[in-house]
Length: 399
Image (cartoon, rainbow, N blue to C red; front, side, top):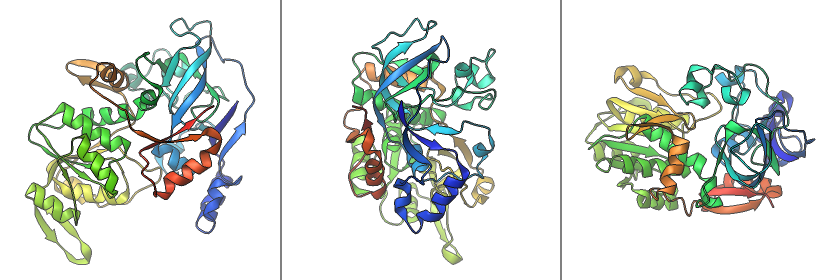
């Protein structure tokens, strides 16, 4: 099979990082740890595995971070033993082309999406499973680094891949391929909002109006029609989309002054450009997760407000932590999707997203704006990175 992967090769990573400041083209060269190569095919590693031929896969923020080598060896997850390659592309739709003898609920020709991307108890067939997996929170698996994973598995950025039966979900016939590709990122947004749902009359802020942020707006409005949703976004066309998705206000001008104006908070200016608010938003969903957005978010929240981190960086960040204790701010992390309670039912946000689509509650038409042949992946990453086009979601298409 041919697949795009990030090679966990320290010399390559360091050389690419070192040269990138002088020669940005290094990201698109053989020096980069991201490569598109032929990998020897292998048999299914067990009776509970399937082979899937990819149709298309979306490019997400994590893929961008890997491609542009943003990962830092000092982050916590870098200390965990892992696989020598990270196969890229987890927002995908494909067709089952082979099943193991133990797979009875999938057939050749079925369309599937990938739910479980990283190692967990079900993929490793660990029984009994850890507490997190037992609760349906496979992304928090305590056996992430236990045992070994079979090699040469692949993912969405390739012609096909091999997956454990527990990793994939059959797509209902009524769901189009374009919608199926959007299930995974939409499930992330739903998970985030259910981790800390907005309450009646609360004022909340969504930072970033990309795919994740737009769907956070959608679900915040769906779960609580009587909240007031504010958005912070720099790109004009995304501001318009945020309003269409249900945002009440797009912040303009100085965000400290805008926050004070919309929430009634008191703004104080100290020396050295040091600004802070007393009062502010009840809830902030940060879909960016950079040093600046974390730093500012903590200052834009009222006392005992809630900060939800959805966007994240694969490198250490810097921010002033004093508002956390001084204003008793609560911090909530979001790791992809997981099990939450909705209308009294405990359900995976992945399954709930599919349910909402089939019931007509959620419409994901129009999110895909750009399509590239898989072989043109470098051009796709370059154009997304440039920021010069109205790209919401770009996908790689396997012909």
